[in-house]
Length: 487
Image (cartoon, rainbow, N blue to C red; front, side):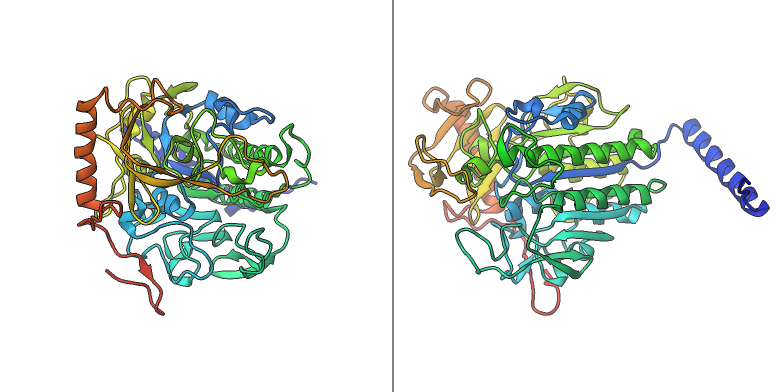
């Protein structure tokens, strides 16, 4: 026997359908679109070379490659800080992290975090009726005032900091407490095995999409992988030709595919902008357990291209062109103001550093970057480099390096970095020399003069520990004293 809906339920359904139809007709007649959904997929320590369309070898990423075929591949997209917490502060607030007082990688001892008075992407769109979720790695403060649910996210499922901050750390055994898994503001478990972490995150992300398919939403999916220690589920174990690291990337690619499939199955892919990128380059000291930034120089923890240029793909069927490449500079600080433009959200009252890059997203062959320059910081507020178009100027500083011929570990234990010093400023033309192998500072005095002036402007604004500049416009980090810090 067939099941029949009660009469009043049928009438209600008909009225709802009629209302939806009238609403859609009104939107068409007025030339408006419903608010777009936003999905940001942020991986951890994934190198520039670790996606098929960026040149990966030894493993395949069919879903990311398909995403690039259906969207825009960004070949010169950057993070402003090549380290975990700082990079995350920037993508969520549209600010250089040193403006906010966030440096390095916060651990379980940190009594500070992202100041609750800063405006995250989630807080940007909440007044517009968006549902918001953070799934994955947070790393902007593990104490209650700083957790995602107090920074604009309706839901949080994930880890408060890096997955190596646990008792099994190879260099600091038993320094860290058990690794906590959060649901909202509560620890629901501690992890001794991370094999299913990527799967759990994917299931939560898909569930959130299905639950909110009829309302605008923002999903921030921040994978812990491929940050060490590497873990992969049984369904991808041994699948790649590049060992455990390749297996992990293949599972992340599967995760991307599941998210895209859910958007399609729920009929909302044409109203959803999906952004895929990484928080910084590969952690090269972990050898076979790290990725590749080839052909870029160095990796995570440095201001060289291998540390800050990250694989980035954006997809929005019908709004972004398919199969195009954007070679102009962009940065994660630009994501928040771009979302503000797309959603008609109000930008924060305080100063932010990012700019709307929608014109260069929708017109990748002609759209130019809205920035005069980007500034690359590391350590405790050191201005180490300036990026201006195809030019990159470095200032004297100390950096870590893996040297040719160093023994490469294969068991997940790190090798030692060699600390090197850059004694004089150096200039590179990234268009002609992506490997940063030819210092051309002597041949380009006018370019150097222009970039030095830009650097002075940044030092006045944000400070610079290398030149003992304080900066006029840095804000207070959130400090825990039983209540959130206030400015």
